[in-house]
Length: 112
Length: 117
Image (tube, rainbow over all chains, first blue to last red; front, side):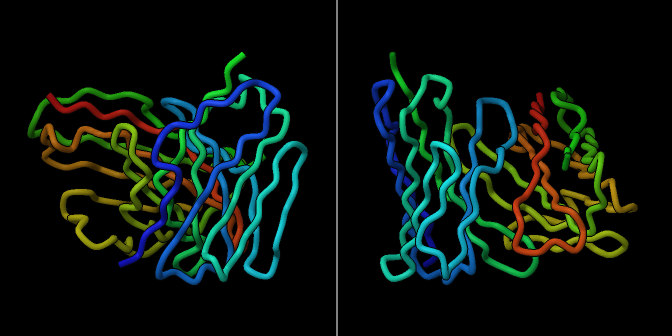
């Protein structure tokens, strides 16, 4: 069966440290993968997109890697801040156009 | 840019009534919009793809007669939950991306919290 799995438990880290979130998938061959941030009671907000032929993408304190052999993406937030506390979702392109299927999400909490 | 507005943000209705949720792209045209449903502490589940000027495409297991979708213009899609029941209570979120942009990020509305009593 097809699955997209993220760290199932909440991730608590100390301010200033690097947070690393994982996204593993099975029985998909996505052309690209995206990461979103979602705050409670709000819609997701786009962060980064990485294509199947790209290994790594960076944007400010964010870095995403994409390993199509391992079927895994890693999402890093460096120098984390309490304001980074949120749920982070990975999403795979799974159909025509812009259709996305989302992972289970990881709740990140950055503590002082 | 690329703002998606969803209305209402919260709605409470009685069992058996119908509720309409609107999703508007404010500064771009969207040939396709997507409707998701999210349960507490769970991920987004795609319900259907809304296509301007044609019928929506529903995901497996989603009742098309229960969740009516209309995409009458390039900036507006509506989701109507018909004959709502308590189990329909959920967080409904729409998304869109500008027409002609493929393999691009989705822009989400801020969701509608539906409570059926």
